[in-house]
Length: 279
Image (tube, rainbow, N blue to C red; front, side, top):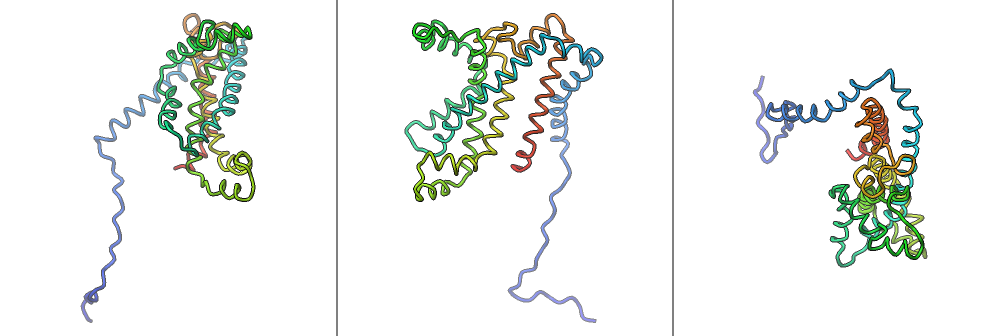
């Protein structure tokens, strides 16, 4: 029996790469579990303290249904308005070069980090009866926006539209612009290429951005109460109803919070496939 043969000269031996270690360092595991507990314990407390026996009666009261109806209407209208102006804005940021584009993008994303109450004050100074634009709307057309349902829609659009713009712009940057260029070389106008080629390509990004914008509009509180007030049946949305109920009827506040939690879970379920594809 001969011994093991030496590897031939000039031939490198193949070594299987080692599998990465699956152990988690204790210094990372402990803070990770603490962060997870910090996020989950308040939600679990909401479920544990919920008045499940009285929940049907709480959620079927006329005031709750009025707030829910107004919330759904305003959030849907704000999302539609965000799509009408937000998708073209995202296309402008992703497909064109112009001076100050970085500044424009920063201003578009500013409502994401701006405190909502500050956004409400800004809307009031711009569109209020004595505002920069609102005074002319009142003098020329007799239109008053603050403390109206329209004011709720505008406040929600202000805080929700950046979510749509960012999502659509990212999708546009990932899409191959050569399809649009090919359509224009075949005689299509830029708008026709956008409508017939680009929109079908970025439809998943638009859908994801619209869902995020709708969820953000549904949960808006600060800008709404500052710019539109808290009038039942006219400007009192679900978050405002939760705030008001928490002062007088904590059980009703928990019931309303559960309703909004259910909506948030539905939004996460709707975006699950997109997140999994991204991962």
